[in-house]
Each structure stands twice: as C-alpha cells, then as structure tokens.
Amino acid sequence: MNPAEMIVAIVALVMIGGVLRARFAAHARSDMAAPPASDDTHRLAYEVQLLKERIQVLERVITDNRSTTDLSHEIERLRDR
Image 1 (cartoon, helix red, strand yellow):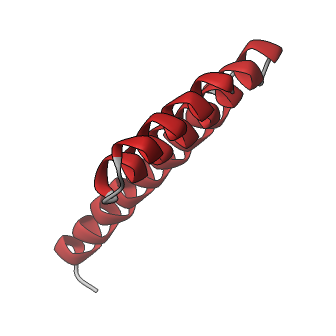
Image 2 (cartoon, helix red, strand yellow):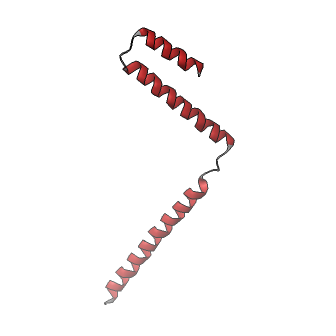
Image 3 (cartoon, rainbow, N blue to C red):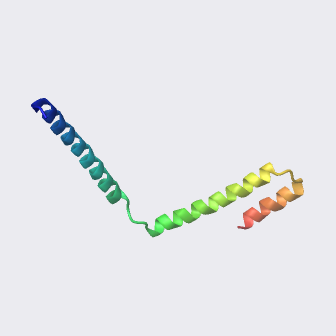
C-alpha cells in the first residue's frame, strides 16, 4: 500500500466514524426528548378517540342513503352521548 492510498483510507475511516458518531448522538437526543405521559396526555388521547368515533358516525350518516327520520334519530343518539 503506497502512502497516497493510506491517506485516502485514513480519511475515509475518519469520515465514516464522524458520521456514525453524529447519528448515534442524534438518536440518543431524540430518546431523551420525549416527555413522560401525564394524566393530561391520557385525557386528551381519550377525547381524541371520542372525537374520531363521532366523526366516523357522522361520515356514515352523511354517506349512507337514509331517510330523514333515520338521520334525525342518529343525530339525537349522538347528542345523548
């Protein structure tokens, strides 16, 4: 191996090492950045789930071909929730 090839090999190894170090450092920072789940987080997740269910029902009501009587019953059922 001549000196020029050795220099290229050393530079390549240093560059690969720098990239790997930066990647692992970024991964470690992203793991520590996530806050622990609190009661407020659980409450909001529950509310989002309820809203998603209501949206599904509303989409079904709008897209299904039903009479206006069925539509009014479905809306009243949603209000009672």
